[in-house]
Image (cartoon, rainbow, N blue to C red):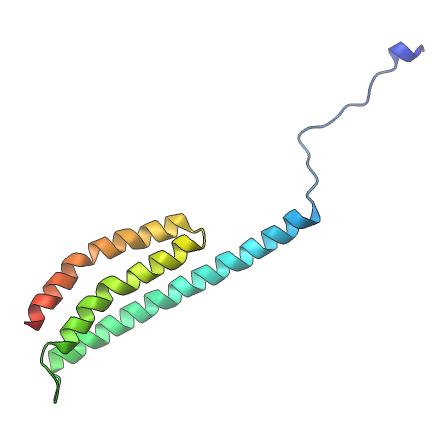
Length: 120
């Protein structure tokens, strides 16, 4: 065979070798996603419990305090805590999760107004 007739080696373009930096970045991203999910879950649980307790406190009575204080607290928390979860998720790159909590925040405006009217 002449040198012109030797076939060139085939180069595969569908295989890429991942660098150490890319592997470490994937591991950091997995930890960050887990941390964000746990933080948002914590805020959601605090939101559910605190609003329920504030509403219960307002319904059963508030001895020694203004009558509408518990309902005011509940109406603020019902909007504030889903917004906090949206901010946590969005700032950490979980845009879809943040968007879900933004929609939840907007949906909670109506119950907040109803609760605030019950305070007066």
